[in-house]
Image (cartoon, rainbow, N blue to C red):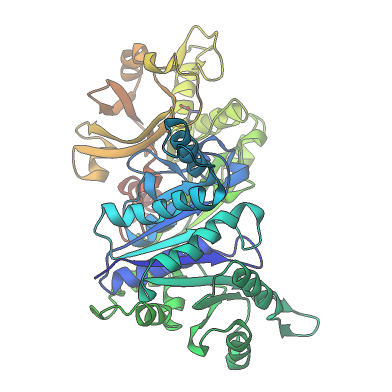
Amino acid sequence: MSKKYIFVTGGVASSLGKGIISASLGLLLKSAGYKVTIQKFDPYLNIDPGTMNPYEHGECYVTEDGAETDLDLGHYERFLGISTSQDNNVTTGRIYNNVIKKEREGKFLGKTVQVIPHITDEIKNSFYKIGKNNDFEIIITEIGGCIGDIESLPFFEAVRQAKQDLKRDDFLSIHLTLIPYLSASGELKTKPTQHSVKKLLEAGIQPDILVCRTEHNLGKEIKDKLALFCNVSKNSVIESIDAKSIYDVPILMKNEKLHIRVIEYLNLVRKKSLKMQKWTKFLKNLHSSKYEISVGIVGKYTELHDAYKSISESLIHAGANLNSKVKIKWISSDEITTKNANNKLKKLDGIIVAPGFGNRGINGKIIAIKFSRLNKIPFFGICLGMQCASIEFSRNVLNLKDADSYEFNKNTKNPIIDLMENQKNIKNKGGTMRLGSYKCELSKNSIAIKAYKKSSIRERHRHRFEFNNNYLEDFKKNGMEITGVNQKLNLVEIIELKNHPWFLGTQYHPEYKSTVLNPHPLFISFVKKIKILKNGQ
Ligand code: GLN
């Protein structure tokens, strides 16, 4: 079978959920027996989102191979249970960088290097690369941004050209739009979608399928109207109504027969009927959990929940698995003081101190950690959260009052968290942290080993600073165990406090590996402990 390429574009408004629609379609096709992957093309000039503030772009998602990528890749992995890589996320910056490098190497000698064909060729090569190097049968490509955006133009042009390159039934174009509802007149309006499709046609792309985001059912009349004006088959206007949770979208798409239309268009051989039992079981658990627990996420980007997407999703996965609805309380670390800590934190059943960079909000995080340590509230510190837990312990238990991270205080006599020797000469900020998957050995009788049920694990990293081994012995002697280490690099990866119900910090990011059908063992262990402490079972 030749490789099938599905391109998902968006129009009318941004943030309609192309990532969720792509992931939902990917899941349906995977459940129908095909080997599927999803890639995202982003129209900005950064080489990757690793150098962006989370307020600009939400969470930066890290893959096994250490690529810093768009948060939509997190949805792809969580929905499909697949591993993505550097090749699954390409930006305009990367495309231009590649072309300019080739120009300097003389690969285009004699030619004027131009957007068409050189940039568009590079984009197309990237479209096909992942399919060429792997045995995927279907490659879904999400084009970031909206039709009409100046910066997306070369991507749309490359999609148009891809249609020329590929056989008729190896190419499919899906356009995601919005059908706004005017409450004053009680009407759904199709005009913005008509205009969006016109814009797409100007770029030479006729959509085969329209997926329409809406707050109200479209009904046959609106669907037929959209089909007529947008020149798509009547059965290819797919309604995507607001869902209770993103995890309901695959089922809504299944009911709308999106996958069947795709299978027909691409002339795919039917493999098997959809196997979605596990997914539906997850949804049932998600929506009918008996218990409720509240977990505070303490961070400095809490106004934008997307900044901690993988953490909040991991809590949802673990909660559903344990018959527990996890209510997340977002707590800005800037606003926690010694005076208000009790009021702000006492009602929480568990506390997570989130990853992050820079000095802002550090004091609030340390106060929250002290509160959970002394009040025996389950505590989970992730990356910077683990580093802050180490600083808190040093200051308040080891009595090293100036203990700090080298990141925040270059002159401290007690750099509990320090810069690694091999990081000292690195000047560039992009892609230079400890990134991607590293091995970690777990200690006997630890919370970690009981959760993972094995002694050797691999987890993903994204940080520049590390636990300073000069303080190892003092930590151990005073009740903070080191329960996970990277033996090869001699680095601390997990700390656990003795004589506390559940107090654990990881230098790595467990949240990147939690999926709907395989919730992460540490999140399971954390939520389970909270549930038992609260409900006694
Ligand atoms: N800022 C810290 C470091 O670079 C932690 C990073 C993080 O939380 N991802 O080591």
